[in-house]
Image 1: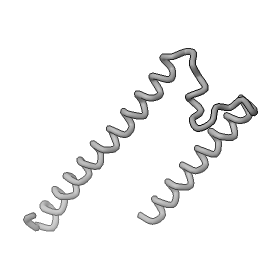
Image 2: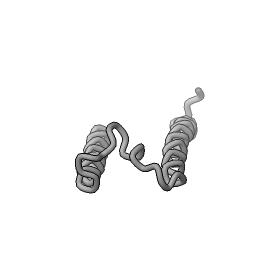
Image 3: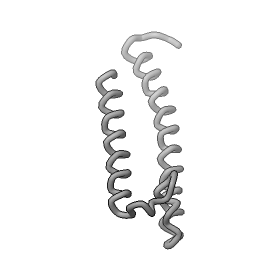
Length: 84
């Protein structure tokens, strides 16, 4: 688990660094402060779609954590014969 956590942190950090470097390369000093997507006002649907994808991603992570808990509980009961 430790290796997976470290690799996830490294990959996420590299992804955000790439976003920041490419954003600065594309916009220079005119880059919007805070969030790269706030600098795009046209097309509106693209910003709305990106925000909807973020919500969907967070919701999917929450649902996956719930199913992971149920799967772990089922595996313990089936293979270790423990009632809980």
